[in-house]
Length: 354
Image (cartoon, rainbow, N blue to C red; front, side):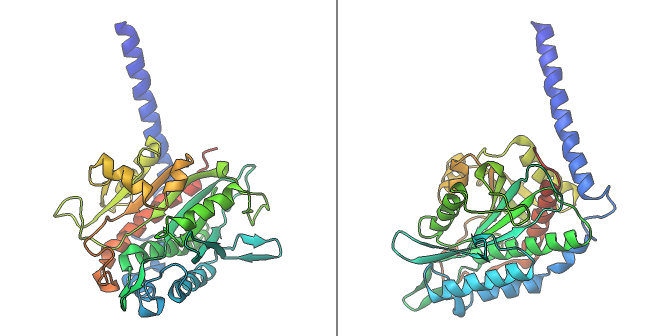
């Protein structure tokens, strides 16, 4: 029996070491054997603090009226996101063969007209089996009530701007010669505040085989989706994990990610010298972590066994208040969080699981 225990321990240690080595190799390959450091990666030049603030400011401006689903302001926000997707080179994937659109329209339970915005980032490598990652962020908020605009700068203009920034950075990296084995489906969800109607509609359409890969023409089925990444409130520093550490981020997966994928977030943070404090649950609470997965757009994906993770800076006292405006965000930390997402995403899409 002691010999058996020693053998099992040795096997466990060996497997652990192999996982660690695989993670390091993946990151080093993404770094091109460390010739590109975190500080001088050219793709980082496409985002800066003032640019981030301008985009957040537009989405939280009076013109968007708080972005309630089914309102003129919500439609204005959707059109802004579609323009950014097009400028970034994302391809439309929804609609008929002769007319693809960035918009996926639907009705909420109360009859409001919602509009998801969907863009496709094409992988570089031709593979026998194409694999995908979904990057989602809801853009709707609660709108205008009694003449007061609930601007939703952090909730969730910040997540949408992070999403757009990721697409911009990945496009630049691809133009500079990076090759990716996975494609990304970027989805700006509408209707989050109407029972996650937008993410539910997207999942139904995906399950019904209504999306086709613009590169191969083949149907994108749920079975070919490796992960769902949800971006929900990423701009504030007022709810830190530790009081004296504003440079933090929560990467909450509720046990849906494997150990390798969870560790990869931490390794990316260290290797690229970002030094963010990372939490893998909602402030140490198992109950709140479960609740978070039920009240955000990650819900339908996790329920259907898609490995899922939500990146957030947490609920703050500004939530659902008129003063959740562009001036309340910390753009230096926000940019640093986007850097983490970019480097981590680069490693993910460079290496196919299958």
